[in-house]
Image: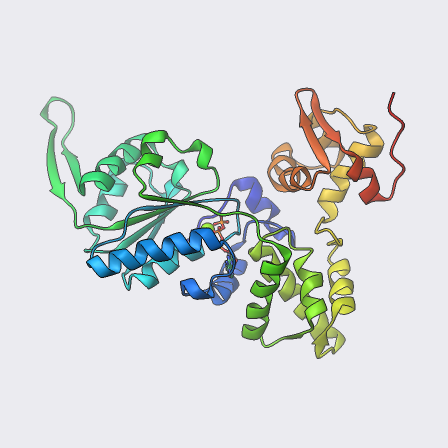
Length: 345
Ligand SMILES: Nc1ncnc2c1ncn2[C@@H]1O[C@H](COP(=O)(O)OP(=O)(O)OP(=O)(O)O)[C@@H](O)[C@H]1O
Ligand SMILES: [Mg+2]
């Protein structure tokens, strides 16, 4: 029950470079998920801090402090939540903000936790207001007030909870209300991975998938993976399909490059939609500024899809800029498309 991402993100999930996983992908992902902290690649600071915190909790024989993990899709938030439970040798309960419609839903979960249990709440920024307030008290005092009855006859019954560890994940830390954020004893922000780190992720996955890939082959896939392990693993599986059908036993840089070209993933990790957006921006709108909805219409996509699926990466890559008057192409955009940049007055 790993409800990841927004609707637009899910719609983009059929894209080979989508940040969010579809249903089948999630099953495959589970198999490649690192189970322990020392298998988790990169994010050195977060890893070291988490290691200390969990080590201390183990020595004191206490439930670990609540942990908040934030960062873009596919960087390892769910993976780390599972690792927290594994490292604490504690059972793991999984739910998500959108699944908790009202305070009663949350009360049911909280009241059934056992001592030391790890409760993972994905998309914790999407919880309802009353549930959120109940969570404040549960996190701080390990106690909830259960309201029984309605109107004037309503009474509230206090309920003690066993100490537990909440692990919250969010792709939008900015949307988290201050009081909730403050109740997490540890906050880890996950950053995009370097190409070298993604190569390590890929090496580990290739071993599990029983694939033979050269160092240059790994580098080729890593550099097209948008700094995201989920995408790296997905591209690796597509390369495996291609190699299998072509009868290749070893994947080198050229094979990886040709395979990914087949799937419309270019050498910088842009796919067909990203390039369509860039192309429209540079050629139809002369580099902009152009409004997002107009731009989306030009490429025949929903505004939300362009905004959540294509744009963040194009902005991060310095190809597109956002101004008060709309989106603009930056000089790198023309260069990437192999077009001459227009003269600017
Ligand atoms: N540091 C890492 N080392 C190795 N593999 C990783 C790492 N981080 C993520 N992965 C791989 O990437 C996949 C996606 O990670 P995960 O599901 O934890 O991302 P997420 O941050 O929870 O994304 P979302 O916001 O969409 O829920 C996992 O299946 C895992 O195999
Ligand atoms: Mg997740």
